[in-house]
Length: 406
Ligand code: GLA
Image (tube, rainbow, N blue to C red):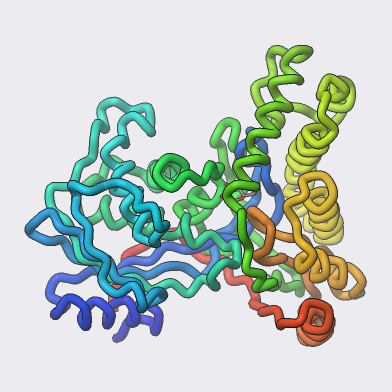
């Protein structure tokens, strides 16, 4: 028996960098794709993501001292990055190790993050050597950072005996580390999808209550396709954080007439339409409209899926894209081309940008027999209009984080 090719890359990297593999353990955590429910997770709304077969692999071993040594096969030019348990501060040059470091830092605040004082501060007394390899296409918006956070959380739990932590706890700690250590004020969706992933299922999560349900994805002769714009996106964090502020402003103004509402996700469309005019800034109003309508679309989409109505599901995906393009303004030209060209094809039921936006991927429902034509046609138009190609992958829904054995 042997490790998969990807796991082997992490394992061999370990051997080359740190000498031997005595006692080394190998772990995996998945990335995610969101089927519908975008920018709703920090508005107390619903999301519908699933974990994917792309993810991050790590070969890891505890050390006897307090050193931390990191290696990534994805950033060979960085080589071994060294730090220690006494230096848990983000480095200004934004090195990738800020993600694992952030999780180790957040574990020290676990009791507080989870509102469970009995958990206390989970401090490590020994450091580790860790070698990473990820096969999530870089910059694709498929949550490599969440995969990294969940991976490190899983490793800390398994290696250091923090068995009081559930996978959901790992998601919350990962989100906290990204918010507070890395300064990206993300919602819970990505970490939750990675930590709670289940093969063959998407996760219908109400971020207001954290109640969730697994929905089997039975595509009935359809395929879920991911298309990567390969756009190098910039300013994502600052634009993202700005959207959050705009939504916070919207709810603040709405509360002047609806004091009981705590989040945009608590509004039905009728309730919102009745009071929306208290929002004075037209841009803030558009953002709020997206958050409210997208949440309702997500609820409706999951209901449609449950009765096997993929046509309706696809239409709602298209509406989601239009709303992200026009009201939330987190799409980009490249993703618009992919989605809009897909809508023109008879064998495509729905297509939308997925994830935080400003680049990344679209997700589409395509009839199985149309897939080759989809790739060829959309690929050619994209190349012509954008000047570089797009990548196409068939979505494979994966399980959550796990230890791998050869
Ligand atoms: C990013 C964030 C998520 C979520 C999406 C948009 O992926 O990390 O929390 O807000 O954007 O739906």
